[in-house]
Length: 347
Image (tube, rainbow, N blue to C red; front, side, top):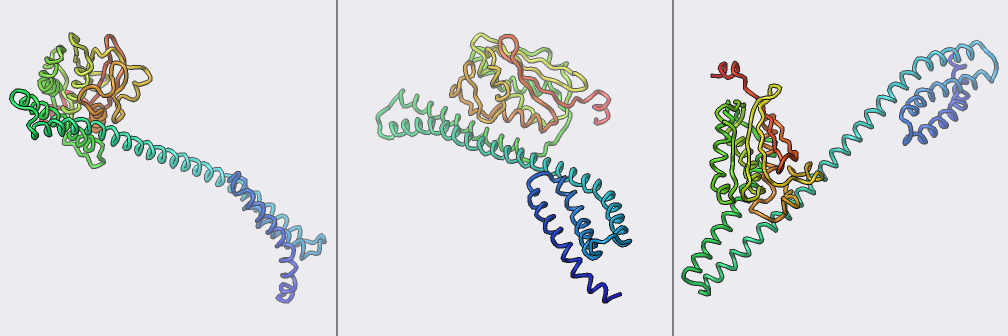
């Protein structure tokens, strides 16, 4: 028996090897095509090679061994082909999903890098202008070119420019905090009316100087939310600052709040004249300062306020939207609402 097997092995190899080579070539050609078809071919090649070896050993004669081998190969093929087809489909789906995920991640990285480059360019430009003014005025003071009341005016302008740069640096710091993966908020019950009152008080001087009226509907009746006082106040103040800055003299900024579908909302209506529809999706982008009513380069902002507001609101589990309405646009914040029963339990 052993001698017969040794004599049959070279013949079986002679017939099986070409079939395996052809199968390998087919698999190589299909490597960049259908993964499902490649998996089916991978399952059938060994069966075809085994069948070729048996046919060679039988001397191309009809023998019981040949019939039995064909039957076994047929049964194995019926069992393996559907499995191979299913595995191929699954692998192809997962590979496609992974490719799309990688492409989305790469696009996000490229977008973030482009935003970083734009932010650096914008901030470099915005900082260069006041620095140049400060340098020119300090040179004039040092050289004695200006004296008396004019020197006092120069010192006041230097102070204003220094304050402007300090605000830009503070915005960069807050943006870094707001977008940091390590940001952890200490949440507690906050009366939304008190948060807005603090923001209105901080912005009242700028509003008076711009001759803009800030009106709020009974803040004492506004809902209580779960939030971090400093971050939420910063987000609301940024929205209010933005509204006052872009509302013309004699205009109004109106605030209202309430509860809808178990969520607290805060609405800020300004009189900016509206935002172009194409820009509505971009107003929260870092560095974006808009066109027309929101002219780039005007005002002390660096285009970071709305991006900071959105990041802090989202860190609270909330959302922020904008739409054109009436004389301007409406910015609306949604936040987790604390129902009265929950507030009593926490107290």
